[in-house]
Amino acid sequence: MIYIPILLIGMTVTGYWAYLTAYDSVREREYQLLTQTLTLNVLEIINERRELLIESGLENVPVFRDAYQKEVFEELKSLQQATNRHFAIVDKSTESIVFSTMKVPVVLNTQDASSAMIASRTVAFGESNVNDQDVLFACAEFNPWNWKVTVLQPAEPLQSSLFTIAWLTFLVTLLAVVIVSLLMGRVTQILVVSPIEKIKSAASRIALDHKKVTIDLQQNDELGALARDVEAMSGEIEQYVDEAQQANRAKTDFLAVMSHEIRTPLNGIQGLAALLLNTPLSDKQKQYASDLKSSASILATVINDVLDLSKIESGMSEVDVTEFDLDVMLNELVTLLGTNASSNNTRLVYKSKNLESVVVISDITKLRQIIINLVSNAIKFTHKGTVSISAKLKESSTENVCENRLVIAVKDSGIGIEPDRLVHIFDKFTQSDSSITREYGGTGLGLAIAKQLAQLLGGDINVVSKVGEGSCFTVTANVQSRLKVETSNDLASVRDANSAKLPAGLKVLLAEDNAINAVVAQALLEQLDCVVEHVDNGLKAAARVEEGGIDVVFMDVHMPVMDGIEATKRIRKLSGTLGHTPVIGLTAEAFKERHTVFKAAGMNDIVTKPVTVDALQESLLKLAIGQEVTDNK
Image (tube, rainbow, N blue to C red; front, top):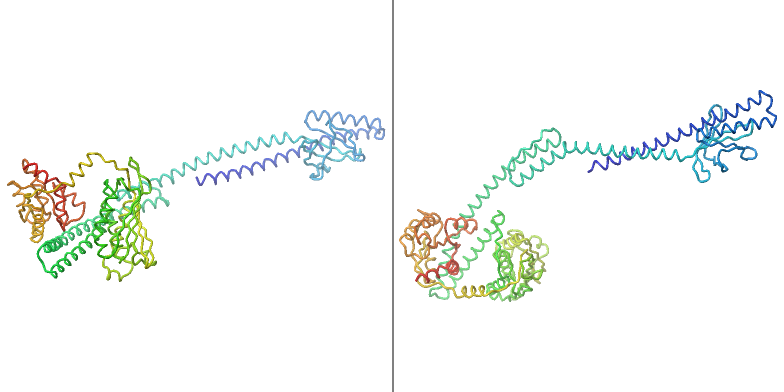
């Protein structure tokens, strides 16, 4: 595409030059023929007749001179018919026409004529216009008879010949352009395009597979060198990818172990603090227990932030799309966070637009985490002020599912953010001021996590702030939406969910090797009126289920002798209904990928540590264990 215009211009210029050269050559040839006709034919004929007069001594006899001149005129007429050229003779003294083969008077403009000496005669030649017709002419003087003799030729045949030359030049040029373009295209295809396509294909394979590639290219030019460089680079990339994957697996394993090792004692701290608060305590003891529980919760939040960030950065965080009522979810968050706002003397306000009776399809967990992070930050930095949450969809929803854009704004009247810190507000481990960490606490990860989660949902988070007047964080996300049409089945499901509760005396087997966590879990399950048996490893758990009489098993994953995964597999191999005994995993591993592995081993559900009464009850109700036990009774 680059060569063809250059080639076309070059060939056009060459063709135009060839046309001009041919034009000048043909014109010069015609002038040469005219002057030769004038000097070698016409003037010779005239001069022969004059010499005959001189030899016969009759030159000065008018009658004979006129007769000889008429013979000249007759020969010129014959010459005109033979050559298709016209002849004219003018008296130099009177400028009157003596003879002409043209039917109209001949008036020539000879000012721009060229001159040359031919056969010892001065001849003028050029181009003129006679009666609106272009002609070529050549003229000379015959002084003995005081004549000016002119030979004329119409320019039209010459122009026709030049037009034919122009067309031939154009066709030859076009044909040359086509042939050369095809040849260049073929050569370019072989030497340039084909090697580039091979290199491009190899680069695509590298991008997809991250494996070493081999490029079948033997040429020793720049493209051949590039191909060999790409091959070498692919080998290095394969090595780097392997190392990165090993490092990522090591990081994942490390996080899983650290998650388990940290969450396990943390579960005991939180659980014991909760249990302690349910016992008779003095005011000071109650304050100490409450502070203990709050400190454990803060530590759990920090751990969750670090794990969330690690999952996002390692590409392990996936979008889990579900259908939910966004308006209800946001109202529940306002209720949940309202206590924190009240304790900070802050008013929490929520308003929505076009969300009523609308179902949104997106990742509810990530949306909830984003809003909790933003609202919690707003409450933390706002004293005796207002935090407002507003939500809307860009487009109105219909009964059919359609693509939409969700916009949620969290605005506060707090301390605000300095302009020079706004650029870094979403950086990891960054807050608007280093003193904020000391005064308000936090790791500086919340906003970084929220922004990356929003980007996972196809949106972003932007902030506008002014020191002393507050901040406004705007979240956008790509969602799907539709109008909610409630049926009688939906209403019945809601009534069943609201009325669902666990029956008293549910027989639960708790498999937990950590003594403190076992005490906490057993106490929480007993708050749900469950009858709890405790074993400290998976082998004992499988043996107890085989004996029968167990309604559900809460199975810790990491235990000595036999872990929870192997114990669950052994339970699933039991005959009859025993092999279908519900198993709920208890784990400090917060990674969804690990939960998938646990469920693949046969676990029905997973409860992540630190465990709470609500989490235990929700898991039991989710599996409809209480209903099954009631039906069996």
